[in-house]
Amino acid sequence: MGLKTKAEYLDSLRAMNPTAYMFGEKITGILDNPRLRAGIEATAATYEVAEMDEYRDLVVTQSPLINEPVNRFTLPPSSIEDLVARVKLNRRLGSYVGTCHQRCTGLDCLSTLSIVTYDIDQKYGTHYCDNFTAFLKHMQKNDLTGNAGVTDMKGDRSIAPHAQSDKDMYLHVVEKRDDGIVVRGAKAHQTGSLSSHEIIVLPTRAMREGDEEYAVAFAVPADTPGLIHVVGRSTLDKRELEGCDIGNVRYSKYCPTLIFDDVFVPWDRVFMCGETEFAVDMVVKFSSFHRQSHGGCKSGKIDCMIGAALAMMEYNGTGKAGHHKQKVIDMIHRAETLYGCCLASSYEGGRQPSGTYFIDTVLSNASKIHEGKEMAEAIRLMVDVSGGFVADLPSDKDLENPEVGGLLKKYLKGAEGVPVENRLKMFRLVEKMALESADTISDIHGGGSPEAHRVTIFRESNLNEKKKAAKRLAGIEE
Image 1 (tube, rainbow, N blue to C red):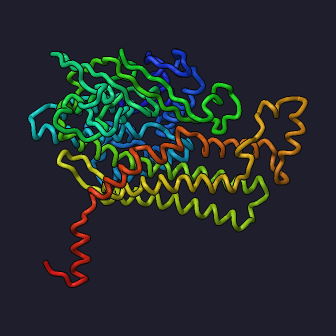
Image 2 (tube, helix red, strand yellow; image 1 turned 45 degrees about the vertical axis):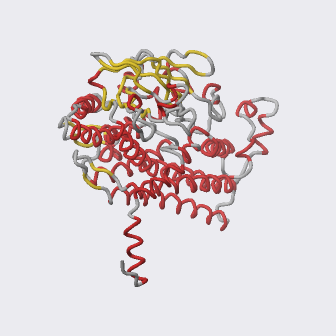
Image 3 (tube, one colour; image 1 turned 60 degrees about the vertical axis):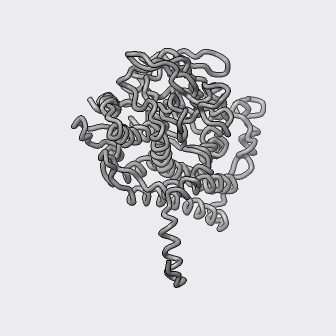
């Protein structure tokens, strides 16, 4: 059985028992917590759309590994068509949920490991690729969601992992046993870790001699003993709990910090352990795949923002205002440029020795730099078109108050023929998409810092070929 229904996905999470904290309290019944459930519903959408006729051909594909239909989020790309489909699917889902669907990071990890474990085995005669292949079959046969545990806490960033005064600032192996390893450390910004079945851990940076215990990759279930999810704060985060002023009434995003408090990992779930020179390959492959994923889902989110801006123009009575139309055009331009850059990175990709296809790193990183700048501008344009009540709209509770609710609805009405309730709901959605820090900050730092994107572009570009072209035109022969 390679495909789960949405109901089966939710049942599978309910059967798990992760250790989790939020707002200083231990959480039980993850699916019954409105704040977390809104995020889980975003991931559940990746299962829901697989059952819908208009999405099925894009979401469901055949696995050459298990020879069954699988959800594309469990399939490392084996062709250019697969690379392109990743972008198209992420865009459709981005517009469907209007926030992060949280499942792309797991696929980015699977795609990375399918390349690098093979390369390590070729050099050292290890069996990491066999371990990974067995794990991938498990993911596909059970249609599981993976979470990417990549970003370490880093401590003093001017110091290598092994030189930190506190060795746990980077996740590392603290014990090797006959049956597996024990790891300690923490991973930050773990979007959707409680929406996931498996936590897939990769190194966060290049490693060098002395960092062997930090050069580790593995996977463990999200409810493994010693694994602690601490849900982070973000703007608007209590509104799901209060049940009012929510904005996006269907989906949300949450990002725990994940603490590995001496977690045991069996050897058959270890994909790298000590091979420092391959850490940089893990980082480059994952970050490039993830930056490609961002371009798809963020262009889809801009699609939602464009829809919200158009609705607000209608509800405010500014649908014929030329300067508002121009702002919508500018938003469309940003979405299509971001999308086109990610498609180009797919079409320029190629086959790796393992058989997995990899994207063009320069184009995927260029896309992420574009996203970091232009998503902020798209948000500004959406707010500009919508109006000032994005900032301080009275609460739903005030609107329900018998003493002031009627007066508020009288004065908050917009264009003739538009129910005031519709205008207020759209204001809330605009506020959510603009000010939900868990999602908007990822436009800048998701998949690495902007400087990391620039470094990758410079390192991966063929600079000598560019100089050679210029010297030829200038008549310089060397």
